[in-house]
Amino acid sequence: MTDPELSPAAPGHPELSPVTPAGHAEPSPAAPGGGTEPVIVRALVARGSGAELRVERVRLPAPGPGEVRVTIRAAGVCHSDLSMVNGTLAARFPLVLGHEATGVVAEVGPGSQLTVGTPVVLNWAPACRACWWCRRGEPWLCADTTAPTVPRGETDDGVPLHLTLGLGALAEAVVVPERAVIPIPAGLPPEQAALLGCAVLTGVGAVRNTARVTPGESVAVVGLGGVGLAVLSAARRAGATTILAIDVAEAKRDLALAAGATDFLLSDDRLSKEVRARTESRGVDHAFECVGRAATIRAAWRLTRRGGAVTVVGMGAKDDMVSLGALDIFHSARTLRSSVYGSSDPDREVPVLAAELADGTLDLGVLVSGTVPLDEAPAAFDRLARGEGARWVVTLD
Ligand SMILES: [Zn+2]
Ligand SMILES: [Zn+2]
Image (cartoon, rainbow, N blue to C red; front, side, top):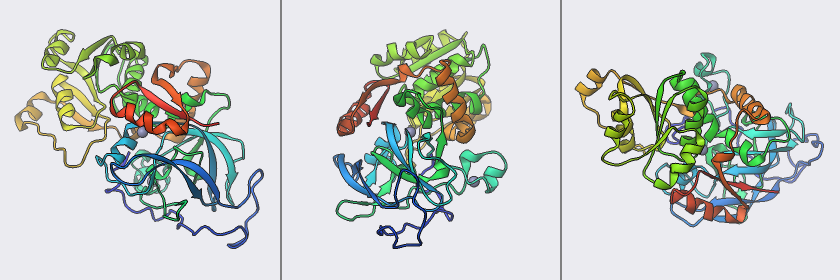
């Protein structure tokens, strides 16, 4: 995901229009199955950094031109949401949390090509297809993606709402540009389909697109949250033969082995030694850092063989500085790079992953630790903060 502070304002984003009764603005044809009225839904809202999370009633505008309203079926509780609440990432408040979700198109604005009833996954980095990066085939670096700083809708007491990554998906519904939704087949388990929009696309893309892991290679994964576990399973599917799962919590061992790791290692003083003992003293071909901290980036660097690659998947704080020796950088001949949204084109790759989920070649059951109703989402954030489980998913009827 992008750092909100570094994102340019999105020139193409429709201006926030005040909530007006239907017919007040330019008349637009009522969508089948929907109206043109604002809707009031329940959503998980953070009122400030460190503030208690609460489920509140919020008012969403009717979808404007090229926009859709999506009824949310399931939304994952992702670490990036937590980072916005706890101040690791810059955020504006009040903020509706959530950016990893699946749902069904409930209403379309004028000019939308989508059909009411279409199942979709939300995309937090919809590409413009026109900027320099999009034209050279790197839509994950799009310069004109929906700006997360633009408010949409309002709270029950009339304060403009900010939406996490332009979505605010931990809610009964969202109103988003139609380019932020990706159609998927009907009938997928919602708690698994939701993960396609962030953890799975990010984890699979880091392995397939960024690092390009090939059969027989060795892999270490540092940090076993939802993304780290998705990296493990993608590494297994890519044919890696040594897959070392690393975390500070012993409780992650069984999850890691179930997700595809060949070995689990505790992140402690002996880590480098343990990794070298499993890689003929060289270190791994690929290390994936899935935490977003300088200390774990340095750990991943040290675990990697000469000439190997470190892929930073975790998103860290801007003042957490990574220090590496100049001679070490030269002598180790390692590559250090990041993987933004799995270096993926979500419009192309989410349907592929959804098809794999449908035919059973992709099984995300191990990633879902449990489902909870929206009212229990604050407790799920507490569990995430304590590092319990893989992914907690909020499901809505
Ligand atoms: Zn996420
Ligand atoms: Zn673009």
